[in-house]
Image (cartoon, rainbow, N blue to C red; front, side, top):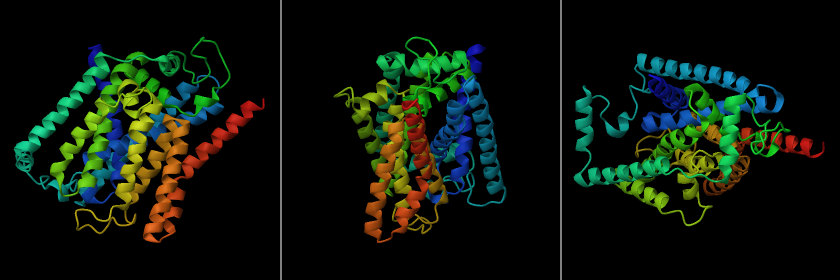
Length: 390
């Protein structure tokens, strides 16, 4: 019975809550681009952004039991946003608008109107050739192999002595970045890691599920974050190949092979992806930066299915702009340096788009979306210098 409750809690906080939160930005995405994958990915970035809002002030300004304070604030924010997402879905479907159930991917696969689940599966199966089925089976075999290796042959490295122990300290002592993991003694605020609160989110999941933080880091996080990353690659593939959907499984197989054979150095993104999945810098490299590229594709694709004029040149797509801001905020949750990297990537992209489209408004719009990252970097500089000159 205990294992059942733990599993339910994991499903709730790693599945139900993110999906419901993701219904909010998905509500403002054109119907041709809505999909369950977009909803779930948006929900994770929204959830991490909410955790940053709740945890960073607690780290900086609450000295005792700051983890308990941050956890309570985040739980309230997450539940409110999840309820808001469900309300938006209910409102749209009640009004028969192209909403999150009525119109989800209707222009894409044309199986939403099928009656029973068997009819939907049959309609979808007709769209896949035998080669397509084989390619998808091969990809899922590669994915299963990676999940098995990540869990059964979990990698332990020197960073575990810091990141995993920080999660465990938060779980056991209700404090964040106030106890030195290497000695267990109280210490001043760890400025270098204080604003990157991803280990604290792992601790939150551990507390809610009632499972040791080490188990959550090395077992649960790979099972959640590795499929989530491939879901992001799938959404990118859908945008890149457009109507040539038969190329998407091949793209996924190639990405899986890159991940499996990318361990040519301990510093490669592929190495971090499979051996340090639970660390914020691994999530930043494997998920956040590719997500930024995905959002660029959502914002500035030339056309959607060749007949949807709502998404052109970054106009008429408020949901993608919301997602853009959430991805930037998630970078701060993962790693302080990741905020700088995504800002540089955004600036370069904005400059190139402004030149190609001859429109300086692109720089202004993307600059406005980067405001949370600029605020984050400002807080980091102020806190770092205040501790440096103590």
